[in-house]
Length: 197
Ligand code: ATP
Ligand code: MG
Image 1 (cartoon, protein in one colour):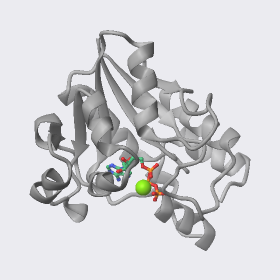
Image 2 (image 1 turned 90 degrees about the vertical axis):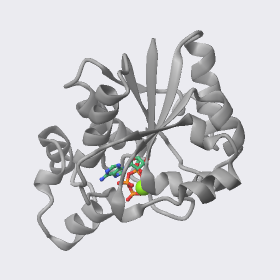
Image 3 (image 1 turned 45 degrees about the vertical axis):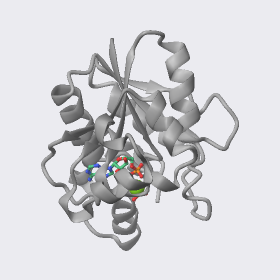
Image 4 (image 1 turned 180 degrees about the vertical axis):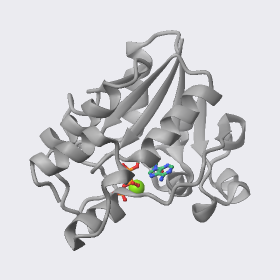
């Protein structure tokens, strides 16, 4: 069993997330892909984050369309702080014998040395799947110096470049700019229904 772990704030989830998830599923031959919704991301402490119940609805809408995708409550079910290292450790216990691949976009890979116990995270995960984002290219040799062992764990995922981010979508909604087609229709409907952002 090969399980992908895809963590995020998903405020809101968008096409960029789906493309990374589906390419990772295909290219890394995953059996299941867990979307790990983070209630309170440690690296975004001073930002207003949409209440969990709405982000939960949006991620549920996304995973509902694809049998291999699942929402994981592993961070929702424990008090903050929600560190990825703890998540991978818990999932390792929940799925004994499974191969675990932690998924990030290249922009997030750049910050990896700042993550709590990044070295332990690398040890616990069998693979680190990184979706390439040429506009946020990581300096792998430098990261390897900071985190020995990184290179052996790294699997590159080629993804069509989509300059979509939740930050940009929130800004577009606030400013009355087009955003509808940056998200799956079900997420668009939830945003409209609850007047989010
Ligand atoms: P924000 O702008 O609020 O930071 P985001 O769009 O980056 O939101 P996150 O929930 O922070 O979304 O990201 C979850 C994961 O998805 C991260 O690993 C990030 O690198 C990756 N990701 C986000 N947007 C894209 C995209 N357009 N293409 C590929 N990967 C992405
Ligand atoms: Mg981000």
